[in-house]
Image (cartoon, rainbow, N blue to C red):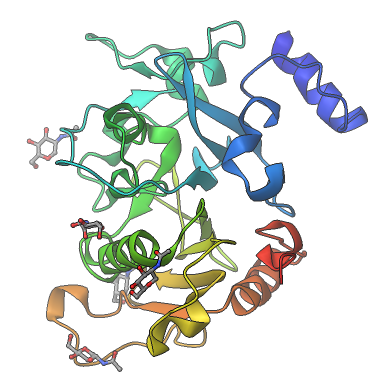
Length: 298
Ligand SMILES: *[C@@H]1O[C@H](CO)[C@@H](O)[C@H](O)[C@H]1NC(C)=O
Ligand SMILES: *[C@@H]1O[C@H](CO)[C@@H](O)[C@H](O)[C@H]1NC(C)=O
Ligand SMILES: *[C@@H]1O[C@H](CO)[C@@H](O)[C@H](O)[C@H]1NC(C)=O
Ligand SMILES: *[C@@H]1O[C@H](CO)[C@@H](O)[C@H](O)[C@H]1NC(C)=O
Ligand SMILES: *[C@@H]1O[C@H](CO)[C@@H](O)[C@H](O)[C@H]1NC(C)=O
């Protein structure tokens, strides 16, 4: 019931913010978007990702795809080692009255209501796809923020050639660039592009596979003494990565001399404008990742 009210309040009065729920409304987690302005153009179910009674990041979830359209978060310089993964789910997607914290899967058989409402671990096991974080553990400082990224509403089916190859290299290079030259907060949004014609699904037809992943950051306050190769990387920068080696090369060309296991999983770095052009083509609607393209201070 609360969920329905939530939906209605979004449909009929999107400016009103009386809805107290964490599913269906970004109001409690606007701090993860630059200027408190959630990325526009895509429709889905907003999830304020809460772990241990604190909001950690925000995801726009697609119930029919059982995977997110994007996750939005604030970058933190990482400290320490990657925590061991223990996967969580979002009880509120199944039970609107649940308390809003992500939860570990309880031992024993899975609750069918949970299984119906979202992806569960067996969806990914033996699927030939890894669980690709949109909001990666690597971009966070606090241990609990890192742990909170291991939730299935923050991952998409990603080929290991991408996840362990060029996409990981991108996450690391964004980490180095922001740690070195971003002076204030860096807001990051990472999302997916679906196949143009026919939707792809992992084996049991429950979770949709994206053709591409994309990512963009907005760092309005940066160190002005940038090295030459990073001059175009501020205040905003973006990338698109292949998740299917069979895709055509119109959006992201293939580097034929890449190592065999990474061949066809290239990442192309680009401006935010170029990314938004491809998003517009693919979604047939204007997609705005950041308020005023992150350029209002200029
Ligand atoms: C995955 O594949 C392995 C080896 O084929 C098999 O032993 C295991 O039961 C499978 N697990 C699931 C959840 O399908
Ligand atoms: C992320 O950046 C920090 C700061 O430069 C660095 O210490 C750390 O090693 C980087 N992590 C990775 C995995 O590249
Ligand atoms: C800006 O970058 C330069 C060169 O890397 C460095 O010497 C300087 O300390 C940085 N300034 C700030 C405010 O981070
Ligand atoms: C790519 O093409 C090969 C050969 O046609 C096929 O076996 C494979 O399943 C395709 N991969 C995807 C992800 O569609
Ligand atoms: C292609 O990949 C090779 C091997 O990783 C690398 O040395 C080269 O710089 C890459 N070329 C381009 C244009 O990215």
